[in-house]
Length: 260
Length: 260
Image (tube, rainbow over all chains, first blue to last red; front, top):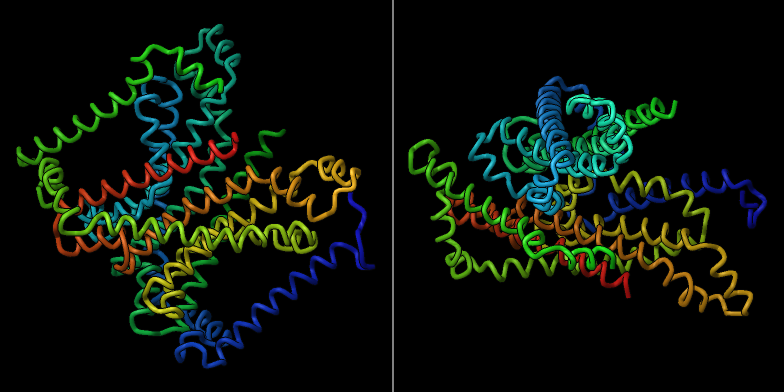
C-alpha cells in the first residue's frame, strides 16, 4: 500500500471530490452551452428538457414496440453469431489444416467495419428484421470465433494426452477437456460480442428501418425533435451499458465457479 | 526471431499452401456463385455474378474515383488518430502524474472504452452539422480513449526501480521522464495508437456510410442507392481488402517499431 502523498484528506475522499466536481463541471458547461447562443437554436437543449423527454418517452406506450424490435434483433443475432463463432473456433482448434487455411480470413476480417456488409445483407434478407439480425450475427461471430480459437490453442497438451491415454472419444475430449478450459476466454468474448451486436443492429436500424430504437432516434433527428432525440440516445446508451455490465457480471460468475 | 527462423526451416510448400488454399477458396466460391446465378438458383439482382463484379472494377477507378475516396478515408483516419494522440498522450501522462485524477477517471475511461460511442453520431450531426467536422470530432473521441488508457497504464507499469536508478544518479526529473519513463512505456502507447487507428477507421467508414458523405463508406452506400450492384459488390470487396491491408500494415509497423 502506498502512503498518502499529500493533503490531509484520505485518498477515497479526494477521489470522490474529483469525481463529483467533474460531473458538476461537465453539467455546468453543458447548461452554459445550452443557454449560450453559440449553437443553432434548440440544438443543445437544457438538461431539464432532456430529462423531461426521457420520462415522457418511457411513459409513452408507442416506445415499447421499438424497444422490443431492437431487443429481438440483438438477441437473435447474438445467439446465431455466438453459436457459429463457437463452432468455428472449436473446429479451427481441432484441425490444424482448417485453421491454417481459414483462420487468416477470420483474423483479418475481425476488425474490418462490418456495417459495410449492410447493403449486401439488405439484398439477401430484405430491409426488415432479417438484415438487422444478420448484421448483429456477423458482428458477434468474429470476437467469439477469435477468442474460442485462442482458447483452444491454450489447452495444455498434457490434458489432451491424458484424455488420449484414457481412450476418450473425440466428443468426450471436446466436452471434458476443451469446453472447461474455454469458459474463461469465451465468456469474456461474449461481452464484446453483445456490445458489437448491439451497435451493428442500431446502426442498421438508423440507416434503414421502420421500427426499432435506431429508427426512433433517426425519426426524431429528421423531424428535429431534439430533446426527444437526446432522450432516446440516452436511453439506448444506458441500455447498452447495462447489457455490458450484465455480461461482465455473468463472466465473473463463471470465473467464481471455476475458482471454487 | 524464433518464428522467422522456424518459418525459414519449413519447406516452401508448407509456407505457401495456406495462401494457395485461400486463392483456391476464392475461385471456388466465385465459380459456385457464378454457376448458381447462371443456373437460375440465385437472382442476379440479389448477388451479382462474380464475373460482372470483376469486370466492373476498372469502372470503379475510372468513373467513381475510387483512389480519391480511398485516400480521403485513409487521410481522415490518420488525421483523427494523430489529433487523438496529441490530446491523448499528454492526458495519459497527466492521469499518471496526478494519481488522484488517474484513480478517479480510470474506471470511467474503461466504461467509455466499451461504450457504443458511435451511436451518439446524431448528436454530433445536430451540433456540428452534417459534414467532415462531425466525422472528425467523433473519430477523435473514439480514438482518444484507448490512447489515454494505454499511456496511463504504460507509464504506471514502468518498474519503480528504473526511475529510482536515474534519480540516484542525480538525473533531473524532466530528463527522467523523457529518457526513462517514456521509452519504457512506449510499447503500450503504440498499442494504444494501433487500437485507435483500428477504431477510428471503423468509425470513419461507418459514419461515411450512414450519412452518405466522404470516402469509401459513402461510395458503397451510394452505389447501393443507385442500384449498381456489380460495382457495389466490388466496392465492398475493396473496402474489405483495404482494411485487411491496413490492419496487417499497422501490425507490421508496430512490430518493427517495438523491436528497434
